[in-house]
Length: 374
Image 1: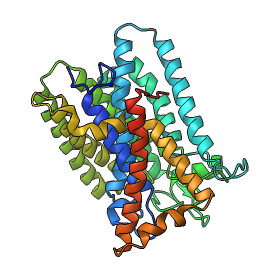
Image 2 (image 1 turned 180 degrees about the vertical axis):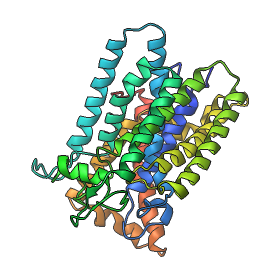
Image 3 (image 1 turned 90 degrees about the vertical axis):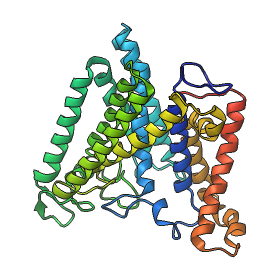
């Protein structure tokens, strides 16, 4: 039986809550610096190809979502629950998550002509909706075949299908900003409603959601492994081995197929982040659900975050947008900026302070047993 902290609902995987909390805390840290011009390299996304600590966060959310789907949706389906009802429930949840993300994009100005349609929550919603029938109707071998097929299809299209770039030149395999197949599709379908910093391509675009879905399906497979009747030691070792194998595959793909790239969610990036997710989660699993399980108090900080992760995700985004709308950023940052420290450090301290405020909200909700689920 997984360890439980006081106030946590029963039948939860302690390691998954803590890993989710680690991910949301990391997201709050990298999304809210005091000064975007002064960041430590690991606290910003790779400029294009490559990866940093920051590039862990989004795929970790999808990986965690996949595990959760197996523990809830998959287990109920195998127990004989009405599969149609399960899917309708998940589709409603996905629609609500999409709506929350879309509404956040209206801030700070309500403009239907230019509002961004894609986003992080929107991609999570799409991956949830697309993964649901695969979890309900297919076994693990078929799910693995889906991953292989989807990544193969995505890679073939990205590398071999010619599309016109921003300069009008038709080319295939141009994995550069705004020149890839995904960017072309987004311009056709989402023109005027994409990421404001580029306007010609979107890091959460439609076509690149395909490999992002595979990141979630890798989480689904991990959830099935966790539900199998194996000892915690065997479960952990095989997750570690699978993680190392995924990292090796990603390095090979990076060299011979396509580079590791978060904005394009390339096949190599999908394997790289799955590998790191398996390695990181296996540590949490061994420490919290294995035989030498740590007392819950050692990771309570992460667990408190993990119990209301989606709410904190949306709240932090809303607060950050309100700070920008009322132009409070400079005022709030000024006392920290005045410290005799390097600008990268003061920027990080502001992010830590923002994190502390969000944790206070999470702690209050935890103490009140307010666990908001969508």
